[in-house]
Image (cartoon, rainbow, N blue to C red; front, top):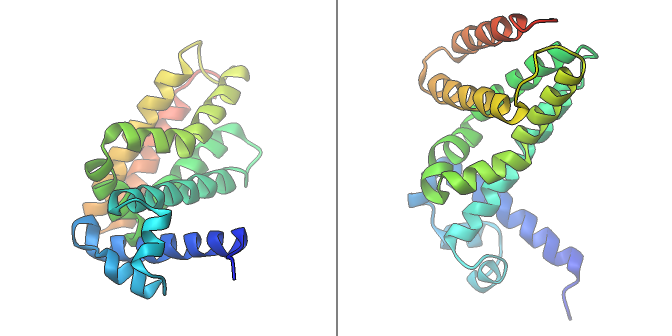
Length: 195
């Protein structure tokens, strides 16, 4: 019997979910495709049908993680009507998601080293960075900061958040590190004319 598109999509989702767990637990270098296929209850042939190789599977996993983080950023930011508060809530959501054990290794450690910064930035640009750019554009339109390049400001904030997430991931007290980072972010946003 021929598999339906829905069956194929379900297999794809299962492979990505299982692979995410393996990449998070073992890292890219030590995750084995045989183990992923076995746990997903598919043959290696089925795995290779969907992904050409381990690199392709990891790319799909990172894309899935980046998309989930972007959705969390958007969801958290939407809890407020205040544009400044939306920005801070979104930044907090990004940091919280980035340092979660399942995301940290995939997104912060293996992602850039396995796929390269260009690919990592492209995925970030489609997700969290996209929400950040939209938020900054709205804030600028409302006169919350002087005429400036939104792209430059988004890159500046995103770079700071990424470095902060890496720092937080190494700190024994993540909550204290989060508080320090968000305090700095609030000071930065509060210093903009019109806020």
